[in-house]
Length: 315
Image (cartoon, rainbow, N blue to C red):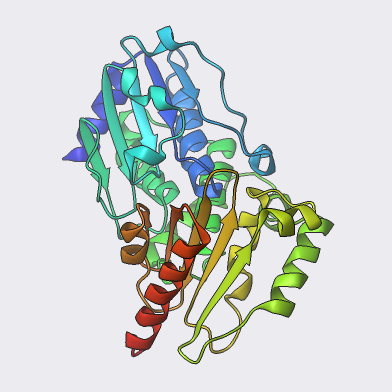
């Protein structure tokens, strides 16, 4: 069984380095840092590091480690919450002795020596809870900080338990995690509070969105528009879900202009969007996916594909 093999690898290696995807979200941080803290709490003699470019909005959860290349020699590398190798943050992930992939996205890129993918899980943080349940008889331990991190990841990827991926098992894990001592209100504030300039951009989006007869909506945030509201391209990601509560919307797309590309963020309440993302060298979940294109003409093609998906959806 894969869990047995993963547990064995973790127990056998003295140095473990954990990666996750670029442009991280709470589940990326929660699963990555939660696994680190679980291993350290269970096996204090091991060296365990988390690496990747930091997102300042998530620094309240964890801070990344700064390690040299030689630390990868004879190390076990684990990548959490990353479907495609191209999206792994910190390209040194392949310098270790062995590589393990732990993820809940569709397994379109089968990288790694050992792969554990569970698309039925609400989040990779939920999978780390599964790992703990299976491994607690092998010396693995839970503590307050691990519980906080994994709970943050589950909350983030389930939209506070509102998304369809939330299952009975998700609630069971959440119930077990909240039995530990951490400040849930502070955690929610850290994940969901937004600064005033981002709130003003949200107001602009709600005032200017348009809804097609098919139930599709698209938002274009150019560099000039982001600068007008003093919002970075990375921070604008906090607003992707803002259209989700609007009646009549089936699916929507945000186009966020960066220096060298246009980021495509797809969300849906029914039509499948990850196959659209895959067409543009992206991927993700059926209801939440991302990609990137080079020109605004390319975005017109994405809109046409999303319009078609909404027209064909019968839900």
